[in-house]
Each structure stands twice: as structure tokens, then as C-alpha cells.
Image (cartoon, rainbow, N blue to C red):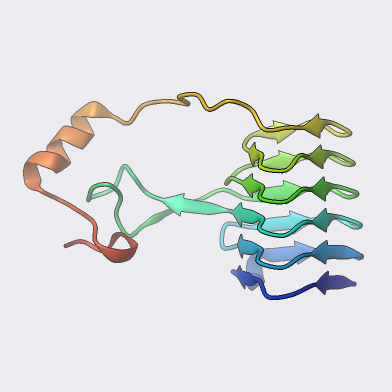
Length: 148
């Protein structure tokens, strides 16, 4: 009951649960290693990115190391996700919500909400002491965060 139209990349399949009549359009990137639920009748437009994990920026290298932080994503039923949307780790999109083109989704989107792109803002700051310690040690991450 899931239809993938065109080429997409999906990883972490063992941690993904997809309902019936789910439409996933071309060039979608889904990283499901942190856990992902997509409810029935959800339509995902092209160029959508869904992440359920992120690099660890508080690890042993800068800008990040080769470990990850996992946070599941839930997309309830009857959701429409527009083109060029990014869904961040830990997001929860409520039943019947519509996510407008180009939006970045973090946190909770209420059921039936029509959610649109908003201006960027600082969410929080890195731990300055930790950052300075790693900078002094010249602890940098190379490809995929592997220590140099």
C-alpha cells in the first residue's frame, strides 16, 4: 500500500513503519535509523528530506564526530507534505496536517494545522567550554565525522 514514484533513498528500513496508501515522490531522502512512523494516506511531495538522527556535535571532534543522536519522527495519517520540506529528528506531525513547500519541521505540529515556512532563528548555542577544549586539541572530524 505504499507507492514510491521515481528514485528516492531510504535507509534504516528496519526502524520504519509505513501505513497504507502512502505516496512518496521522487528524490525523497529518508534516514529512518532513529525510528519513523508514517500514517495511512500520507502524501509526500518530491525533494523531501526526513531525518531521524543527527551527528553528535558534543562528541570528540569538531564540527562533529562519528557518533549519532537518534530521535524518532512520527507523521500521523492523512498528512500532506509539500515539495522541498525538511523534517528534523524528533518531529511529530499531527493527523491531517498540511506542511507547506519549503518548510523546516521541528517539534510538534498540531493536528489539522497548515504549517508554513518561517524565518530562521537561533535555537540554542553549543557548549562553549566543550567547543574550546576540542579546538585546543585540534580534534576535528573528517568524512562522516570520523576523527582525523
